Length: 351
Image 1 (tube, rainbow, N blue to C red):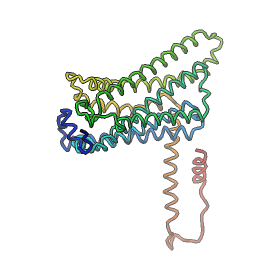
Image 2 (image 1 turned 90 degrees about the vertical axis):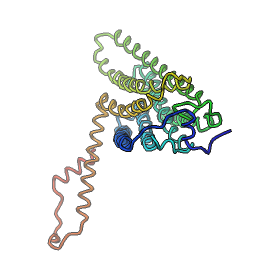
Image 3 (image 1 turned 120 degrees about the horizontal axis):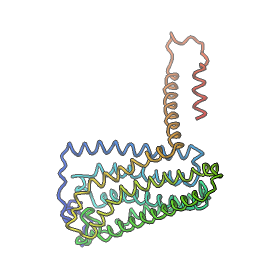
């Protein structure tokens, strides 16, 4: 017997989840603070994508993949917004389809982030083993990789709604995700943890190779070593991003695994909100890491902000000039633009 017509209240009761004791003040506070975080996630990751598009120095495979990682964080921001306004008491009133959409957005963004990090790790491995700043991947191959990443991510996010759920078998329902099968949670958490381990091994291999390579170089080639600092900087940036990702997501995956294994003594519900907060913080941290670790990225951010500010000032000036002149103002003489205005316009064109 399947229960597609039931609302989520039915499945929460089946999984023995107690009602969330959210008062109106607490719910509003969570939504306001969460909305601020999500706005930062959306704006900052949009700036990362814009920086890669506008700065020709970023037109390399590594930065294209980094922009795709920012796009997955941008999707995560959208998913968190949707989650915030469909959580607490509201979550029990969701339809099965609405719950699948809510969780599917989160799972897709996580899968996209994880797949991007894995592809970036492989790109870094190829470039470093050839002792180059950037790999020789063509734009076509990078585009195919990006399309593949999103195809896999969307599929992974849609798997439960395609049939791997417990709507027709209530005894197999998990506690954290009341319409997800425990077997699916085991598959999801174990596969992601394995990918974590693979990426850590790749970067350990890269680190050992770079350390060995730099130690055997002749001291007289210090100039060439300095020219090769850039790939090491890029590796440090990605390793920092990967470290933050592992720290923020591993506890949640472990709790999902325990829930999938039906660990009744683990009290997985106690960690639910804190683990979600960790996930949100990860998407907040990534743009900060890019700008802190990469001086060129931070400089591009500042240039973009200046362009936005200059564009806003120009729009104000255009609106002011478009206003009809009064009879007192209309003298019939048009003044040429000042030197200051010319210099401003030239500066904007240069940027």
